[in-house]
Image (cartoon, rainbow, N blue to C red; front, side, top):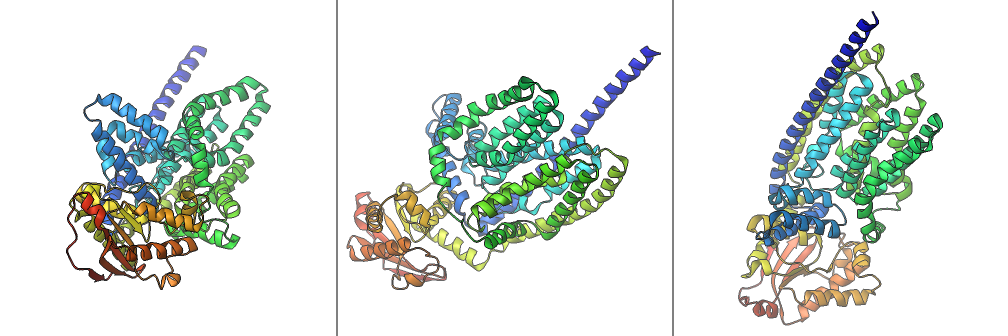
Length: 588
């Protein structure tokens, strides 16, 4: 009889393992399916978007760096390919202080994607797939309800943010992709906290590495969110077993051995540069009310009210079950995860949002996991019945969100505002002007009205004509007060102006403000340094014979802009002397 019982037990164990494997395959299938669908949709919408909009700020800067890396791969085409890729990857680790994991995979496996405005999808897609899969496994493990698990995965992929052409996975923002790895690390840490399986610590460390190498500031976010949880978990583990090595030393060794040689070394190597960059004030120290309005206003913009309501209601339902089942620890862990990032942005930084909205993308996958995933076992009959009923409601809402999200994102990509149309037209006009020079890719120019057009117009030139114009290495002119401090540290306003004038001396053409009389009333200039330098540059160019005015553009945002060609530099480089008359163009 005992022998028969052992046989039944072995058979039951085997069937359970088969069922677990089958469930894992089903979850992976849905994650792959949803990831493929939103990737294709994002790419389609993104292509339409860039036909009507120009490139924006941070993504434009990162895309420009990708193109320069791609050009390096062409320079080393005659060398051993493997050694060339290893060499370029090491250069990225040394020189890319922000996101080497977003470029190194392309260097090794898809170099041509460095040349594409959508190459970032190559690294975004694995990140979102990994997060959704590990989230699905954890939800199923805690709820034992496959229907609810697939519902959670579907709700995640129905988020309007993911296919948004400006903020979503097709745009080359660093924060969203890095946050998928950050949330995956958090899930692994919570699972280790509950199960004490060391493979969760291994995954935690690997995902943390991936997050930090995808966006270096994630080193701070991960420490801020997860270090208190890790300390609490280690103390609790030690109190239950009273074994210092297995409860404290061994877990820490697993983490340190994996993290320190990779992301630890990366952070230490780039610490001084990153610290200097991120401690410059950007959009902080607002009033508490403005900070709260900016933070939550950003999420209302990124998500529909319906999506937020579903997240909150479902999350509260799960947290109430924590209290009902007396899982107070799970309740407070969830509360900590949900509140840490708002506390940091609203109370500590008092960030108002517009200038740092992309940083708020970090919050989405983290809070989604905290709200939608039970931390402890919920495999009770009444709980499962409730979840099946609620899952059906969520799926219906998710279908509506997916359809409306696609319609809105597609409409957004095809219907730019008047300001966006003018922005695109101006970037294209500058690009055409660059391409009118005989020596094209060797053209050097200065943008002395808004520095971001350096990146916008150069990218438009590259993707239209196949070459990237030269740029001065120094920030010649900027509208951002912090960039004056960063680029011209310690100089007086007069010395800054002298430096700008020195830097433009070797340029082929410069775009400056034409109407200097009304610069004081121009809203786009919000600091004294930018205003002072703009006036001095325009005055210098008008009074210097070698700088010839050739084009004036009347814009709504910047008033009149004037193009000056440096005849001495153009002729020195073998170009023809400008013989045309000065033109005046309106409608920008």
